[in-house]
Image (cartoon, helix red, strand yellow):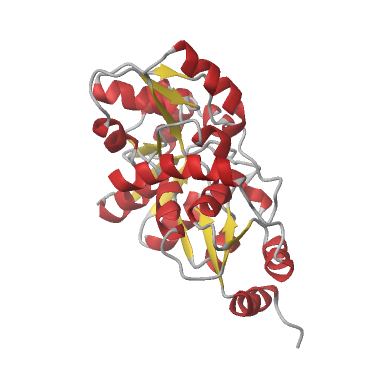
Length: 302
């Protein structure tokens, strides 16, 4: 019998002494074959703990970059090197340097959804799962620059009663969610709590019951007594939610909430990258060392 693609992947993984990390927004079949799934914070932590020689990162490019920065001695692969993040591309290192020049003495904070070049210009990183804790740890009285996501930055600023200088970036996938779509989902599934991601616009966050990272959504679902839950984020999360909570029903706010970049990873290109050890993700040493300081500062707090 010919070898199945999942058998090929598992064989290659053994031969390469590899580990497969997958973000919660990946295709169901990619999450199913991964060794670990999680949100950006969970995967950043896991990347520092694995003992494998090779990390196959099923996500978008900035995530694989972060894994490469944290694991300089390992081979970090991404199945499709064109899987980018529009939000991460909304600010460059040069633009951030110009912003810092206008605000001397400010603390530069970047969402982990940013390029290595931008991380290298920052004092600390945050994820949607730890942003509130990180921001609470910063020195009082200092001006804060928050890049690139205006929605996550605005959400934390409102929660903490603070003001940040917000870069006008956003996630195009979450930007498409609206308060009307939340209202329509509630009407279709009365009584079901609504969870949304902090990358959503403010009116969407205000219309929901909870605003949580994908890791936070998974924790909420495990603990909640609700039998039905409405989810406002990229629909890839539904696979994990349904797998971990077989007795509960999860409804997307909108079936069209799909990140095309997250869906670029397939079993075929995952197999190919393990077979060919390519595409490999590398970061220039001078950029990596500076970016690692911001990532390590985050991990030390969270």
